[in-house]
Image 1 (cartoon, rainbow, N blue to C red):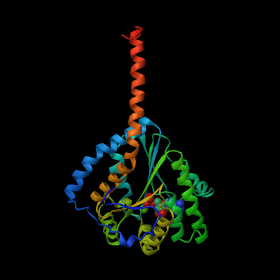
Image 2 (cartoon, rainbow, N blue to C red):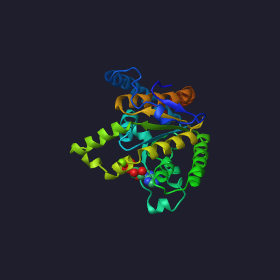
Image 3 (cartoon, helix red, strand yellow):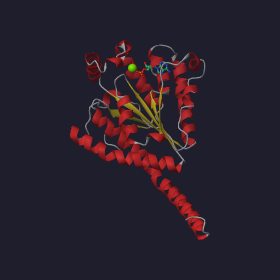
Image 4 (tube, rainbow, N blue to C red):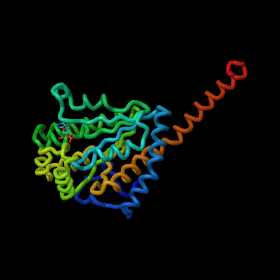
Length: 279
Ligand code: AMP
Ligand code: MG
């Protein structure tokens, strides 16, 4: 278990203000970079095993306020893996067609098949966060959606998908710094969205919507991990360590399956050679 990440399994109410946004796990910035460099080959190996064994999928859900670092996380974590087996699904304001269906319609079809890793850049959780803060749904619809989400995630897990959900936890001050940095850097200004400042004005409402969702939808089979996101290096380490932790229990079974497949293929080749079919 990563020292940096806080695992929520639903047994307690989530209190975001009690979880620091700037933990370092006792590392220096250079130490975090070195740690990430050491973890990258492990992420690559585990993804290769998951892909080759083809028994499980991995769904990594990323949520966080604007500028919390969802894109940067994908760059760091997906970037350590083989792109062949990895897909990114980004969820924006629903299109008219998406909005005409139930909220899980557009989400379910983006989930990973066996052997695949999928990153959700935002997710079905927007349907209990932004919608709740903006008053687009009632409290009772929101409560019903928590139940739907838990059933949905249970369905994914029951069919062999590993579900790991990250809340990128940044402070209000750090967000302001990042928004202003975007504004003053011509290379980053394309990311500017005046609506981010409006959402920021509802910081408290977002925090309580997050706490309610994290409390209702943290389960033993699909827990939430709150990771400190004020510093990118420590955030990346927290997420890499957690992903490795959740995949590790599968490693032996995947390796055993691949060893068996390898043996079968070698035996088939040996037979072909014995029969003179290979030069
Ligand atoms: P970004 O991820 O910054 O490109 O922005 C995507 C925007 O889409 C964010 O403002 C989200 O809040 C919004 N969004 C994503 N999913 C939903 C949803 N289900 N309902 C309403 N807005 C959403
Ligand atoms: Mg945005």
